[in-house]
Structures are given as structure tokens and as C-alpha cells.
Length: 423
Image 1 (tube, rainbow, N blue to C red):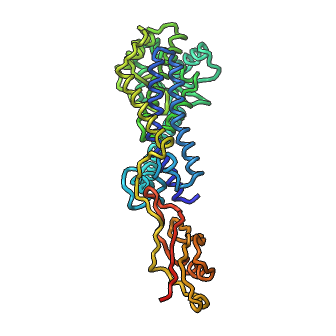
Image 2 (cartoon, helix red, strand yellow; image 1 turned 60 degrees about the vertical axis):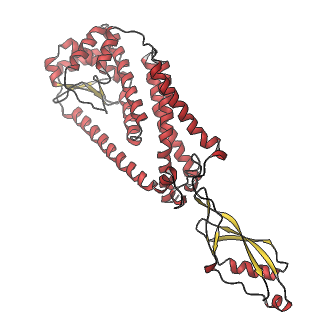
Image 3 (spheres, rainbow, N blue to C red; image 1 turned 120 degrees about the vertical axis):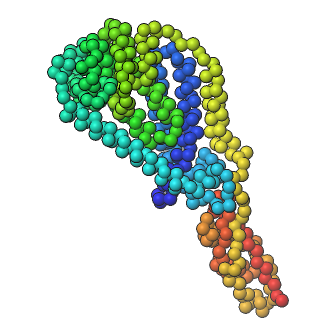
């Protein structure tokens, strides 16, 4: 596939995801409202499914657009809006404008995604370096190992004490490591720090680091859509609740974890998106949930707008595919136009001229998108084969202005008449 076709397919994929992501986000929001009192594992799975759909849908869309080609990339979901090379200069409106600027859209997306990817790589390098070079506290390492054994983990979990960190974080999958701030080791009561470590072991047990890494990749690729960031926040919030439940269950003391989170809330902390941190989510909400778990009432005022937006997105997504006949014209329509200044005048065949033959021949020409004639046929004969062929041979040398359909340059048949007459 040519580079312009690839850019057009990628550009329309990014444009399509604006409504696709909104539709996925609205659908997940409605289901989360319905499941507000379900287990956090259920809501977590739903939010993860929504985020994966945000990646799978544009990936499938890109594959279909690449197969269809650039000329149909925009028109498949947006009738009349083709690839960047197929948009006529005369076309007006948002979709034609997008089609004419797909190169800039893809370039801007690539630049931002590259910057976010570099940020993610730096974070991974920082975590790897911290796991290798930071100090290990033997007493707390032994305590963490005993706690991991009590929690049913069948593998070693390393502990590293890090200066300048404000909250414990977990990283790694094959060789998991818990990074603990030096300030917590020195200043927090041991039983409360142990509760935070139990929370981190919950992340290790569920391989949350891998899921969080996938989240970061999706955020990097689809950074421009608010639904992606909202889904990621919900995943992290539900994940923290699951780890809280894990820690409370194995400690047998939800209050101890709540007190540890309360102490942590007093600290000035930063966020490390590539690792699992005990400070994820709303700390005060998590504390209240541990101390006084209660059912959440349905807030219809919040649900109705989400439902309305979901219906609008669904209708907008369906309209182009299901109502093509009713789609508004996005640009001019016209047949291919011959530029007779480029034509050679047909020469009267000598035999027909001597015999005094006259007539009108109609020739069909198939005009390509670049204005070149790629096929021809006699639609209506003048009555004389030699005159028909002379007209077709001469008119084949004409250049044409290509046909337009809804503002798009298209390949189309057009008719040209030539009158043979004796003066």
C-alpha cells in the first residue's frame, strides 16, 4: 500500500475513534451505574473490557480501511468523505476539511504518542534502576516474605527502600519488587506499614503490573480521547479497592489498613503510573469504605445524561451506515468534462467525404480520477464505422476534468457527441 493510502487510513481511524470511544465510554458508564453495588472485581472486569474495546475497535477499523483503500477510508463510515487524495478542493465542511488535513492529524498524533511513549520508557527505566541499586532492609525483607507466604504467594517478592518516594509502589511481574519510601520505614508504625505492604501484595497476587502496563500503552496510543483516561481512572480505582479487600481479608483488620491509609493521606505524594501504588484512587473514599461499607444509592441525575449521550452516539454511529440514502451532500456533483483545447479535431475519412456521408456519433469514455481516459466505446453510431472510429480515435487524445460525487473525485463514464457535417 502506498504511503498516502496508509496515512489516510490511519487518519480516518483516529477520526472515527472520536465517536467510537464516546460510545464505549457511555456504555461502560451506564453499566457501572447499574453495577454500583456489585463486587469491585466485577466493575474492574467491565472497565478493563471497555478499555480493551477502545483499542480493538480502531485496530479492526484500521485493518478494514487498509483493505478497502484510501479512496473509501472516510466514506465507509462517513459517506462522501474519502481519503486525503480523494477530497475535491471545492468541497466544504468538517469532514472534507479533515480529509484534506489527514497528514497533519497523523503527524500530530505520532508526535504526541512518541512523547508519551518516551515518558513511559523513562518510567520503566527508573523503576528497573531502583529495583537494582536501592538499599534492601533485611528486617523488612524478612517481614515481607513471611507476609507473602501467609497471603498464599508462591514466589519471592523483593523489597527496596527508596529515598524521595512518598508511597509504596509495586513493579515487575517475573520478579516483583515493592519500593518503600524511606520516610515510611523510619516514621510509620510497623503494624501500619505492614498493612500497606499487604495491600501491595494484593497487586502482586493479581499481576496488576501487567494490566497497568497495557493501560499505559492504550493511553499512549489513544491519548486524545477523554473516555480512555476516564476508563483508566476507573480501572485503577477499582483495582485499589480489590487490593484493599485482599489486605483486609488476610490481615483480619480492615481498621488497621484504614489507619495506614489515613497516615499516608497526610503525606505529600506523587503518582507513578507504571507501578501500583497504595495511594491510588480516592484515599478518603477507600477509608470510608473500609470502616463503614454501605450500599450506594442510585443517582438518576447522573445516569440520565449518560444514557442520553449514549443514545446520541449510537444514533450518530448508525446513521451513516444505515441511512446512506438520506446522507446530506458534502460537496458538488458533476460529470467528467472534456477540455476540447487538448483534443485533435477528427479528420473526415476520405471515402465518407467523397460519398457525402454525414451523421452524429456518441462515444462513451471512462475517465479516471486523474482525468485520463482508460476505456471507450461507441454508444450510438453515426451509421458509418469509419466515421465512428475516426471520432473515437481523435477524442481519445482529449484530457478531461474528472467527475465529482459528493465532492469526491471518482472514476466515471461520460458521453461525448461529435457531429460529422459537410459545409
